[in-house]
Image (cartoon, rainbow, N blue to C red; front, side, top):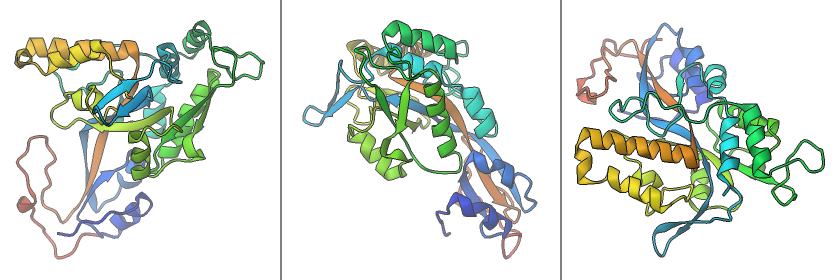
Length: 323
């Protein structure tokens, strides 16, 4: 068995040429290019992950091993964060850029976790005019008439946005967000002036790089959606650096013995979703799907969640992959 990492720009031609029996992690922007290939079959599966926009609200104290939230951080006003969330149209991103292979997400629980996902949860919906009003009331106003808002003291206000490279739609999505924020009067620019390579991106985010005010990233929940590792006070992966006594108490409920009871657990998760919605340390954006392409010489490849299918179950029906 040989695994290779192949640039997305090359994978369609490689599939056509029958170079690989199995290709995993295909980006949604490639779907339209591979769905009609005759020598492969596609499998589409809900991912245990979601994308989000995070706001930098503090630092990591490496001595105490805990988050220290800064009340004076640039993005500290939750009304500023709420307005930025209201400017994001998830439906447009999904339909125009994701080939309808994502699900707009308004809470920090992916929908496949049916016992804790709140199907009636509305979250922060798209509303450009409402976003402008929220900024006006929060004191972010265009003082000099150039179309760009100043901060509450009337001083220039620029927001640095970090987003990672990867796939053909990474840049269009980042540009879309910047365009939407500009439409409500916010000056948002890419950190470093360009998209950042995956490893460098997370190094900067984890190090609380002062060049980052907001960022776009993703979390894989795995089969256990417990949010403590991402949003707990003592979680190094709490990249927004947001912690409060109220959030501590909610996470403690999720991690308590009482949470063995499904009703108690469901209520605790819904309390978490509502608290994060009200305080907006992050904005959930999309729940994603993963795509695999399997060459026709592979007799079976089962991606059903929970299927006990392993590499030892693979059967090949030809000496070489089908072209």
